Length: 234
Ligand SMILES: [Cu+2]
Image 1 (tube, helix red, strand yellow):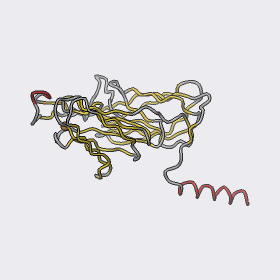
Image 2 (cartoon, helix red, strand yellow; image 1 turned 90 degrees about the horizontal axis):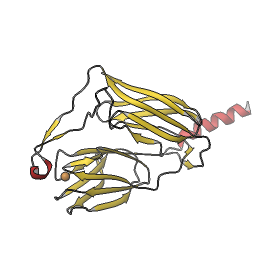
Image 3 (cartoon, helix red, strand yellow; image 1 turned 90 degrees about the vertical axis):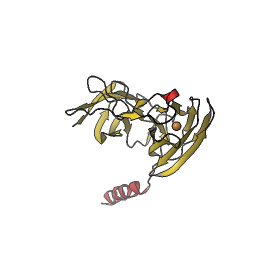
């Protein structure tokens, strides 16, 4: 009876410690989680942006990059992450980067772990003003008037942030910062891979700017690779 009460106590306390700590440990016998994100059914089409400024450098039109799909329905720029994990591999010490290239953000969707540095760069020969919002509130506001300019700052917020440009209204990207380093984006074929995961069962979340969010529970075994399929049915 006492044991049961103690257990209940622990269960009640855990969710109250919100923004749970992440412990960096040496992962022994870590597993890999890999898979592919696809869209099926009514396959959506990307949109085209009419460029209204700086056309000499950026061209007359640009892809919106809302849906970047391979011929087989593979979805690029989906974010895949382990929702909650208490301990795992070290947080990355390298920065994440978003460049302004021909009036678009490169990459269109960037991910990182809380505390990681963000570099905002301007490769273009004109002013960009990268403005990053979380829940419509400014997180960063960087004026980049000079070609090759870089600004580096640690990101202390987590969640999905909107990346915009005050000089070019059509520019739009995303920065997804997470509580742990098990976060990645899908490549042009929709493939992703997360490595060095301590064996266990986790809730995996998949986010896409237009296709939405979904999740699944996955048991990752030590040593080898566990494979999952993620499909957005339309
Ligand atoms: Cu711009």
